Image 1 (cartoon, each protein chain N blue to C red):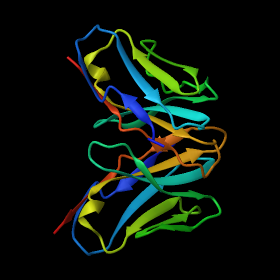
Image 2 (cartoon, helix red, strand yellow):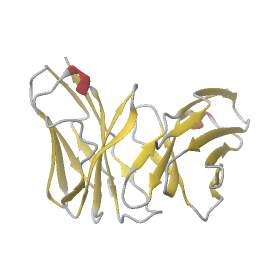
Image 3 (tube, rainbow over the protein chains, first blue to last red):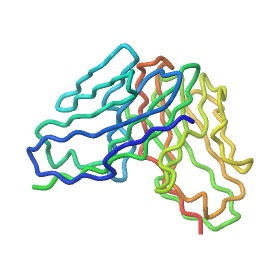
Length: 112
Length: 115
């Protein structure tokens, strides 16, 4: 069964600290993995997109990694800011179309 | 570009009424997607179009849901009759291509409440 599991469910960190969010998936055959940031009351915004051959991709203070062998991905946020407070959603797509599986998201709270 | 535009932003209706949600994709984008987001189920892909043609509607929950794209700049998602369990935020997104690394741009969403 195709699944995407994210951990932790929620996380509280202090401003300026780093954090890492996890995503494990069982989607097959794998096509790509995306990380989205969703602010409260807004639509998701794409952070990174990785295919099978990519194992790391950065977008400013956001760095995503992908291990296609273990079917794990992580999103690392460096020097967190208050504006990083949001939900982070991992989305995995299977080859052959737009079969996409969404993770439940990690709710990140950055405190001053 | 103004991005993906959705209307209305909020909709409150009574059970049994017809609801129509509207979306204007980013100009030039060939793909349009409709999603639903709830606390219980998270984000779900309902249907997507390529060049105004529905490609995959396997995510549409029931026959009460229908979507159309009469032209490249407009799409609707209709629920008839609406039920309280349809209460959710409905997002429209568009992308230029369907490639593996193509970015989908989401609209602000329509928050639907069915009483």
